[in-house]
Length: 117
Image (cartoon, rainbow, N blue to C red; front, top):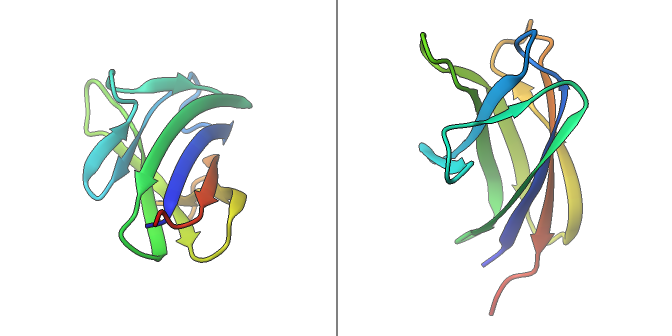
């Protein structure tokens, strides 16, 4: 099984004028942050994530980035599409925005380790 480590996230341009309150979803479940509803992030800030995902196969891994809203529906900011194949090493992926006209910009740093035998 390939092991994907989600190392960190960098905010280049947030959705809101103050800090975004973000969280990550994988297959419909919140995976980060584990012990709170969200993490705050602003322009040029980097947050450590350090989550390992053991995958059953290779292909595309989709992680959704959401912005928490207290008084309205949470906003789906976009999706990170990670190509899981035979490559190994450190990678960075740019967010694909939910709204193509949006200026929101985030990067996800991740690592792909070899299959565990």
